[in-house]
Image (cartoon, rainbow, N blue to C red):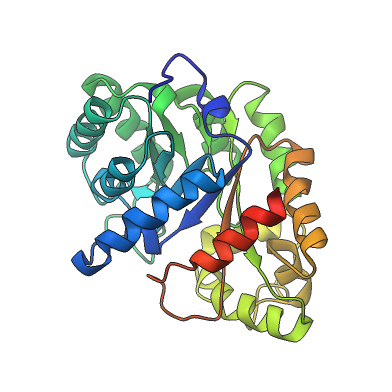
Length: 292
């Protein structure tokens, strides 16, 4: 099913799912991933966003298993594949599944990419190469946190897919992007009502991101303090970047992003399972029911 004449923000709907497990390259997981993708489509999610330095190759099994679902990388690091290889992967998926693959790009982090130099200029050069290779701006989005990258998302892509942000960031991003581009923030949910258990699960997951200055610097821009980003994160920070509690509270927290200007929220369900390749299908079903 193709709808290439419709803006991307209308194709992906209000809710999507963000997952590392769905990009697994373990051959033993391929069947489970296909089954999960088909179920997510039936549950009504408009898009799936593949985490963990994903590539077009990771998106192919999900596209093959579904007929309507949009599948995006969130993100493909520009240091991982050169633009020509990225364009070739895009072209292959576009030929097989027109209008359903979204190339989500990001500059990753200095601690994770040895080549990390002048990230903004590198992204501009990468987009220039994609233009030359025929990848349309309307089928790519950028993992943008700061103002310069948000402006680039507005001018050279279909929009922005900010990770680990708050509704306050979404409101600022919408001001920069304007009304037209897609704004699809990622948001984490812990389906747990007990405050201590919920925050422990959230804090265990958040800790690794607090080692990355791109995220901590963004938190400081949003008004959090150095104390908030220490020792796994303060309760204030955890409660800002995770939703937990009763279903109505979780739904309201997600809707805060829409009220702030998001077109689409990419929801990541976080559990106490330490296996990052896990597929929490029961929780995804519960979340779909929460969203109605």
